[in-house]
Image (cartoon, rainbow, N blue to C red; front, side):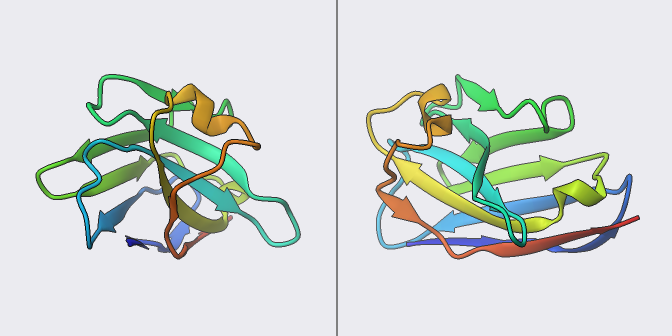
Length: 125
């Protein structure tokens, strides 16, 4: 089970740190990713990280502003979001998949083994 947290209301230019905690099993061998869905839009890929943390991949829209990381000892994946923009407003979800690269997580047809419930991020202008 995955549970995302850390969302909230922030002004444009501000920062937030999302956490995705895994329970029930260890996710240290899974590639983990963050996705988001804005009102009226389809879910989109944000960032992903391999189990070792050695490889990351970002959507162009967040590259240079967001950083994904993980602490396998805590079974937790993080998304540090800086320089937030109103267009970053969305429900953010974490997911995990086996035997896949970080870049492959961005493929819309790539199935995930686990999805967590979302956490809402609202960026005001």
